[in-house]
Image 1 (tube, one colour):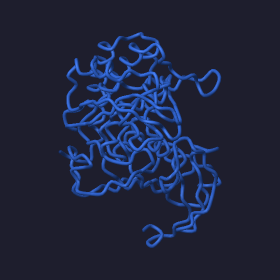
Image 2 (spheres, helix red, strand yellow):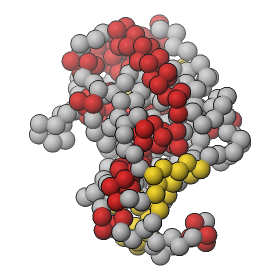
Image 3 (cartoon, one colour):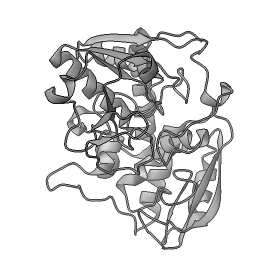
Image 4 (cartoon, one colour):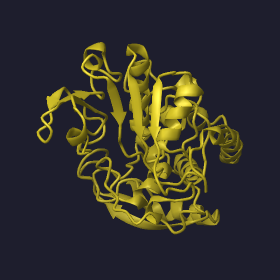
Length: 341
């Protein structure tokens, strides 16, 4: 659409490519987009922030990408780096706002400790932050002092308490492992397993909605989960064989989660409960080592702290911190609301 209305010069690609078709972690090089004929500059390869060479070709950088509402989804930090480049090279930055698909009211999680800052968590947000991309850009620009020339094009008829399935719109998956709106809530729950030797369901038809390992006793885990009467969710035992990623071609026993009420469900608290139980129930469980020598472990980057790995807080203390941090962040983020309930 932009190519028909403006002089579209180039495209900038986040993780997963401009068409959302590449798997997680696949690095990109500069290439030409066949549909538009534009040069595509990769922001998920050698560069995370647009360079002077890239920015010299444009006057305005527009951001029009669907978010998933989770702190560790890399698209929001591609936006932040693009805003930094606009500030540095005196360009305007425009956000075409999109719905937060898991709602704009609910906030849940612990606030990230910037000692564990990374591309899956750069600013001190909770895992579920309850802001649209435009509102998040305003927070980045003011709260975290990027200070670029920001313009947010607001949505029409979106209300804060709308979840994506309330909108009567088709869900277009932003990346290969977020295929449905159900996956959004599962992603907020089980993405922590990316930092462990448990499969988070990549390589199956239900990524993040299923998790497990060849050594997992699903009935034992489900029994412990059911004792906690977690709201808005139910669990069942499942067997699956990932076609790629962890435990490729190995039969895994695990759990499938079903969100039964998105308004009652607490994905972050549920995720921490599952993670603590798996850690404590199974001796085979391990946290993965850092990708680079001397770096932080992935589990610390995803949780935004090291207290899960180090056992510095038990589950009850961790859940209490989630409650407290959620209240603190909710009060802060309300200053950036563009939409009402």
